[in-house]
Structure formats: structure tokens, C-alpha cells
Image 1 (tube, rainbow, N blue to C red):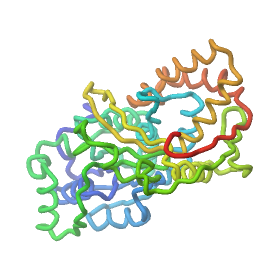
Image 2 (image 1 turned 90 degrees about the vertical axis):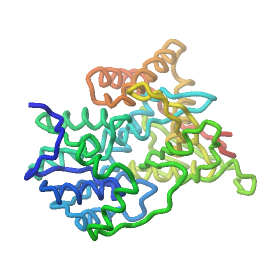
Image 3 (image 1 turned 180 degrees about the horizontal axis):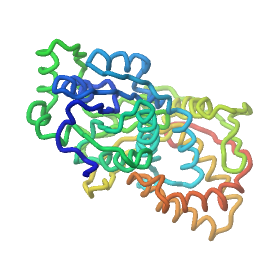
Image 4 (image 1 turned 60 degrees about the horizontal axis):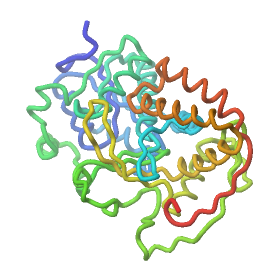
Length: 369
């Protein structure tokens, strides 16, 4: 039996990764009308673009969700982010800047934890808002099956009936209004944003034009460091590591990794640290341009690599960079939990990260300066 369903499974429970946006709201309402039983699962990823995450499951009920759950993913996500730092698992680099794979890390956590939550509700069909043109269709498929080998996949955007009836934002908004569902008309941005506690990705629309500047983006985790009217004072920051893990910032110990990442984000963000303009090579080999924010990841990674370079010899550092880049690509492809990635992670964490203990003081100025 195929794992991927081409049409709506009428009469069955269908789990949906629900963000509260137009796409998933319409999908839930449409599936309910057509005879399926939609069940929504919202990941609390500490996303900086959602100020009221607790209200999202409530909104799902308004669109017809039979079950609506909020799943706290923040701790797991930060732990995976710290593992990526320890391994240097970042492969997209140019112009002296890099992308910290914050969206792929988010997908690894979302894809596994939401499907586990679905299992508790005996929901074994899963869908989301991803299309055939992006990376997420591959990522969610792999992580979902790892969490539940019996999982079946139903994606509205691969259903010809859904696409024919609701093929664009105009059609979706009109459908909601026609069927008396609440529709929160939002102001259209010049780009789309995907965010979690590790970072934010801004892409598509106007950003697909390579002559569009990074300056059209309004940062959600930091400041417009390129704007001379924004005052940014220099600041010294001390970061302590024990066996490759950050444990203290400015002398304050953090047993809670979520609080540590939030503090790192706040410090890095007020300087515009970790904001990069990069071009990706997607899993399907299409090119995609993104503007990325990751102030906390950048701050911790700069300190980590400074210590690493002071501790390890040349060949170890060379292997760290080579294997870290390879691991970063596997992470990007949705293979963060595959055996080939786990082999690299275990080696890098055991032989490289475990020796990285010490304290680094960094002076932050403007942007990555």
C-alpha cells in the first residue's frame, strides 16, 4: 500500500501540522467539509513571528478540527541546535557569512514530535502545507516515517481536487468568506517568513529578485544594523563552554537551554548579529535565495569556534570543517536522524566537541563586525 495518498481519505482522521495561517486554515475546513476528520497539531517552537501561540489551537477548532493540540518543541529544538553548533553542521556559506540551518532543524523536531503526538491520538495519516517545489515535502516525509513507520501521507497541495478548487490565496480567502469561516485578512509582505527560536528565514516573492536588497527585510529577531539611524553600542559578552556545550553567558549559569538561547538571541539581536543573504541549492536542485536571522546561534558559534581553534590541531580542525559541512547538507536534506548523519554527529561530538571547555569574551559592535 502506498504511503502517499493522492486523494482525501474520507471518514478517517488526518493529522495536520497547523500554523494558523491561511493555507492550513483552509485545508482543515475543506477536509472537514469533504468528509475527513481533521486533527491539528501545532508546534510551539518559540517562533518570534507568533506572539500568541496558545491561541492557534483554539483557532483550529473554529475551522473544524476534531482534535487540536499544542506541542511544546522548544527544548528539543534548542538541544538539536546546540548539537549542530558542536558539529559545525552548516554547509551554506558565502561572503564570510553562513546559514545556521535553523529551518531544517525545526523540521527535524516538528516532524518527529508532532507525529508522536498523533500516535497518542491514534492518528496515522499526516499532512502539512508543503508543496512539491520545496524542501519540506522531503523532510516531513522522512521524519514522519521515522516516528511512525506505518504513517500514511496526505498533502492537500498534492490533491488535484484541492488545488483545482483552492489553487491560490485569492481562491482560499474567498472560499473561507463564502463558507462563513473567520478570515483574518493580513497585510501582504514582500516576502514570506518561517521562524523558530533558533532563527528566521525570509524568502520568496520580492526576494527572488537578486537585485532586491537585504534592506527590504524587517528583522524580527534583531535590528536593522545597516540603518545608520539605529544606535548600536558596543558590548562585551563572555560565554563559557563545558565539553562543547554553552553553560553560562556573562557569568550567569543556564540549566535551562531555552532560557540560554533566548538570552543569546537578545544579546546578538541588539547588534544585528547573524543576519545573512545566501543562495540555497534545494533538495530538488532548484536555486532559492533567503535572508536569514540567527543572532543567538551566531553568537554561540563564534565563541565555540574560537575555543575550538585554540584547542585542536590542524588536521582535527580540517576534519571538523569537512565533516561538519557534509553533516550540514544531510541536515538540510532532512537526514539529520539517518544513520549516516548519526555516525558523523557521534564522531564530531566525541572527538571534537568534548574537548572544547573554556571561556571566550567577544566584543560585539554592528552586524557581524
